[in-house]
Length: 633
Image 1 (cartoon, rainbow, N blue to C red):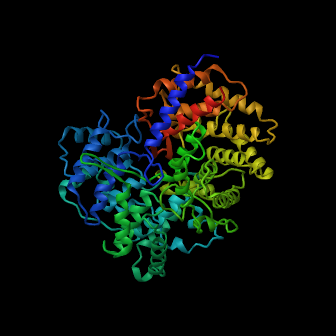
Image 2 (image 1 turned 135 degrees about the horizontal axis):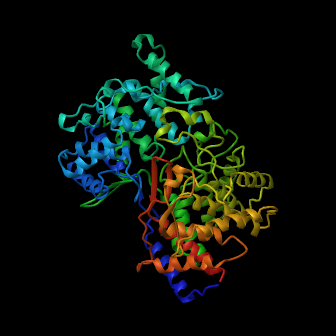
Image 3 (image 1 turned 30 degrees about the vertical axis):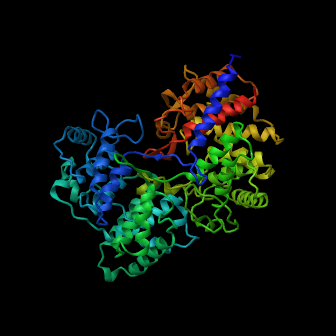
C-alpha cells in the first residue's frame, strides 16, 4: 500500500472539523446553500408581479445573477458545466425582459439565437408553457387539463391524488385551480416574447399532445377534460364545489412557516391559485406565505439567490455523523446542541403518508425547518443515527424518539423491499405518462440509495428485523446493474447509489447479519468503483448520468463524489491502493480554511429537469471518509 503521511491526515481531519464547526448556527443546526438552476431566481421576479410586488433592487441583482451564469452560446444550463437547456434559457430570457432588459443587448440576442435554433417556445416543456400562459405568452388551450374534480376520486380508485408523489400532489392541486380559471396577467409590449415562436400560428393553435402506449389514455382524457372545460359554467355541475374542496385542501396543507411541502414549486403556485380565488395579500394565509418566501432568499448588498428549499435537518444530521465519525466526542457541546435541535423537530402529527399507510404512526423528521405533512424516510433514519451518536443528556427522550422513528420507517417499506422518499408503494406505472411528467417526476419509487441508508441505520442501531432486511437485500440484488453499480435517485448518480448500497452491506455484516451470497456483488461493485477512478485519485460523475441511465464521467474529480466512492470502497475486504490514492486526493485538494471547493452539482432533484448543489456536501462527506479511513489505520 502507498504510504499516507498520518500527520497530514490528522491535520486535514482537524482542519475539516474546525471548518464544519465554524459553520454551525448559534441555534445548533447546520444549513448550507441549496442551489438549483438560474430559473429559481428568474421565475420568481415575474411571478411576484402577480401579487403586485416589484423590487427593482432585487431585479438588478437577479440580472447580475443570471448573467454570471450565462453560457458563451447565449444559453443557460440546469447545472454547473451543463449544456444549454431550452426551458432554462426561455424562462431566463423572459425574466430578464420583465426586469426591463433590452432584447438588443448582446447577451439577449445570443439567448434568442439559442432559443430559435432549439425549437422556440414550441419546444418548451409544460411547466415553461404554464408560466408563459400566466402572462399571455402561451395559449391555455395548449396546456393539459387538471380538473379540480380530481379531488373527488376516492382512495380505492386506480388513480387519486394520493397516488402521485408528494411534490407532484401539492403542485397539481394548485394547478387544478389555476387551469380552471386560466388567468392572464397583462404585461407591456416591451415585456412580451411572442417573437420567440418558430411559427406564431402555434400561439393560438398549439399542436396536439402526442403520446404512445399507455400515455394515450391521458391524451384521450385531456381531450375529454378540454371539452368539459369549454362548457358554460352552469352546465359544469359540481365545478364550484370541487374548487372549494381543493381550496380547502390547499389552505389546510400550508405549513407554519407559510410554505407548502417546504419547497418552492408548490409554494408559489398555491399562492397564485389562492390569489386568483380572491385572496388578497393581507389575508392571513397569503401574508404568511409571502413573508415565508423571504426565508428562502440569500441576499446581500450585491447578490440575490433564491433556494428551491432549505436543508437544515438534512445538513445537521450529516454534520453530526461526520464529526462523530472523525473523532469528535459524543458529549461535545456543539453536538449536544445540534442533537437537542433535532430532537425538538421530530414530527409528531400525521401527514399525507397516512392515507396509504394507515397502520403507521408518526415520529419522523423532515428535510426543512417546517414540513409536517411530508416528513421523509431519508431524513428520519439519518437523524435517528445522528442523535444516537450523541450523549444528549435527554437519553430517555432520545430513546423514545428513535424507537418511534424506526417503527415508522419499517412500516414505510415498499412491497418490493425498497424504501422511497416520502410514501409507501407510490409506484403506479401508468402515472409516469401524465402530460406533466415532462418537468416533474410524478412518482416516488423506491431506490437503492434510500434503501441503503435505511439498512445502514438498521445495522448501526441494532434493528435487525430479519424479514425486512432480507426483503430489502433481495431488492438490492435485483437492482444491481450488470457492471456492479447501483443507481442513486437523490445523488449523482451511480457513484452515490453504489456507495450507499456498499456501506449498508458492510454495516450489516459487521453487526452480525448473515450476508451469504453477497460477497460477489460487493467485489463486483468495488471493482466498478475502481474502474471509474480518475488519475488524480478522485471521482467525478456528470448529472447527465440521470438522463442517459448510465455512468457518465464528469472529466474531473469532486470532493463529495470522491468521499462517496471512498466510503463505499472501504466496505470491501481487500483494501486496494486506489483507496489510499483517494485519501491523498482529498488531503491535497483541501483548502487552507479546512473546506473543499466544489461548484459542480452532485444532488438529485427531478432527473432531466432539476438538479441541486448542496453547499456542505463538499465538507461533511470528505470529513466522514477521512475519519473512517483514519480509524482503520
